[in-house]
Image 1 (spheres, rainbow, N blue to C red):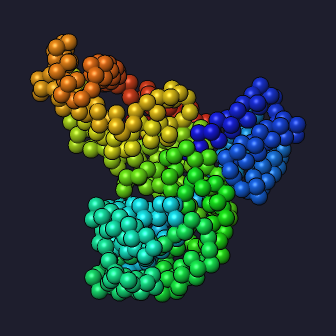
Image 2: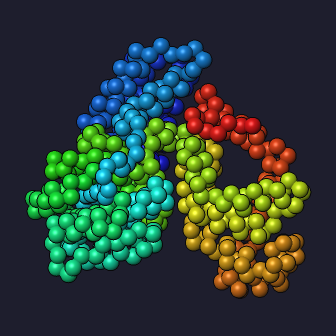
Image 3: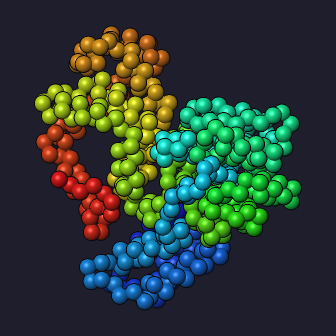
Length: 457
């Protein structure tokens, strides 16, 4: 999401390299570049002004530690100010109330409220272990009700379907009553959106809010909305007593201005980040980690948490034991790794959390979900013996596999090359290379690995 902004901020800080200290002149020049980078990212002008002024005062008043270069000192200042703009410290959903706890979703049409309702439902069912009911009060877009009903079944949540012709306020009242009668702990209500803010929309959502008295009122906003997101945030903030924000479509080519503006405009924290279309593509928002990602420092803590939550531990343990005993890394193992990579959002999702410079330019975009599925299809077209012994794959066998999986022979060769590279890497890690790799990673952060990273043993 912040690729362009990260690049521009890195260029701005690079201008301080080689300088002996931070002066009013070089700070002013660097902040001019920072200001332009933020404006190009569609950050609201008042936020930009406040950000650059706070950074200027800190930079000129800071006593730079002798072991740090001006560039490093300034990055620390930018990181602190970005964290402040993004909300300082994240918080969890407030579920401490008499059930059913009601969560109301509000926002413009196309912001992703319906899919966000399903993602939140999945999060509550799987992570918070709460019996959750989804309901839709969007009577203007019938497809939204059908979509949410299907998604509710997919994520393991209940769904309340109102009678034909029911109005939003009736739906809200009946959904809460249904949740009470059937022992649901949480009710998530998806509301109607518009292409723009209007009086009728605001009156309707106020009426729904009055009936439900929700504990959480979440404003759902599209990261790619730019200044429209700021205007909508202001309007909804005036109509409702918002408690938090959910940013959606953060995996797209957004300039990121909404993320840096909406908290300041609403005065409410960002709670979640939508990072894809799948129902599991929702991450709790951590301002400090996001600030690190914007500055190209990556978010290794979130990456570790993601791996720990989605990687099959039993499978990983079996592979580690096999390698430790001198067993080879065959194509069955590669297939498992590809499937687990796909479950974590693909290579681009992982690369986004690594510090800049650790992933070669363009690599993240080279593998998408379709390519991952194609690679699995290639392996599935092999015989069990071929998967265990890739050396058997001669020209004739490769042509058969390519035909069976609907790809070219070059694609088969490319997969085999990838397997060979991974096999060599696995052999290195088997000899204690993993510890060396992690120590090298720690060297990319002043003071070592970020707070919260598992210790090396």
